[in-house]
Length: 189
Image 1 (tube, one colour):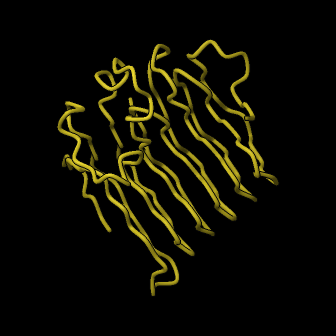
Image 2 (cartoon, rainbow, N blue to C red):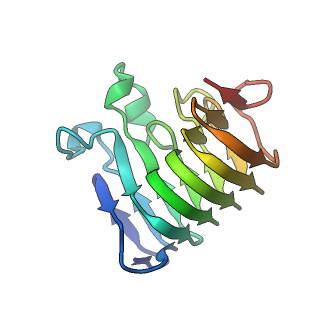
Image 3 (cartoon, one colour):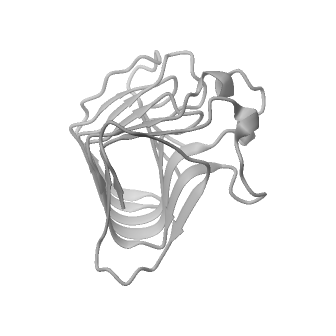
């Protein structure tokens, strides 16, 4: 899958579910992927409203490029109900994951979620949201093992990295910009 540079792609919830025949699925994002500007225009089914871009059951996936995933979060942050806000990128029940080079900006909720992932390398990511943006964790890790995070610039309104239950064997080389006011922004749940 390829998103060319100097183009903007408006997307609603997207689920790509494997397993795939290819040994490694490659997604290259060099343009900008953006959400609707108004939360009321968010089109989702009853079971996929919590995620914007979802990759599931991938057994070798590389998502890279120089592009931006921009959630236009301000109007979402003003909403009272947190459960109605989607995470930007969610990778679930997958293994051998690579994520590099991208910029995540102003997403409505968590920017990147790894859940049920075995072996992941996240590097050279820029994740940003204003200090007042609620529940905009940069990277949330749950029930995952062997996760490596390095050379990332993360500054959000909540945790830069949060680690949920069931996760172990992770390595983080802390190079973060913290605008949230959290003292050191790796937290466990």
